[in-house]
Image (cartoon, rainbow, N blue to C red; front, side, top):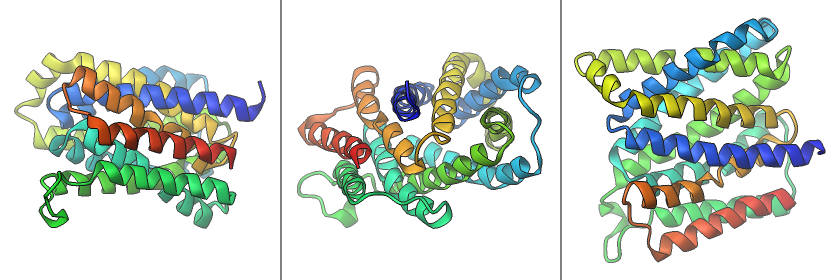
Length: 285
């Protein structure tokens, strides 16, 4: 299998596991505690790998210093979005807008250029994601009932673009891609765990006891999902990996309808298909 085919397979696998991880967080009840549990479990699961990868060098630590704040910003916005809106509403917006933002950010900071067809696919995907945010019929945009959730979802998309670019740089400058992957997972959850301990200090123990399975499952899926994407960053352009990964919106929308009882509706079905087409079209560009 050539490197491009491997990257595509990794991106699609990352999309499926990403959707499953986010459904497990949403099903966990308290989003902040479940996300903190996920991060702590991911760090515990990845800890043994530190003995088998090359030690971080100065370039790796510098890359982590940029990546970790981007990840924390993403996690805070994502937690707030999931707290305020249905998964089938906020997930397509946060993940569908992210590839276009990633492409612009990668163009500026990594000098990665895309073909016109790829840009067309990204624009189509972004417009399709916007369709998920359209208010109910007869409701003005300024009176949108889910405005706060959508604003947090847009903040999440910005966080995704930032961490995509910082992580792509990290896996490329590290002594080995796995060095950056392992240490990112090890350190990434510290801030959100601390936030949960501060904001949920009285409720965190019973919440973890009741919902730790969702956190453990999400942690394992998170390692599989983002680890695959990070390695794919070493094989093809950052924006293309992001686009493949964001086909997760289709999986997440279906899972939200199946497991969370969220209404999907005809408009969202059309938007999800258009979003997937736009993201896949990018690969042909």
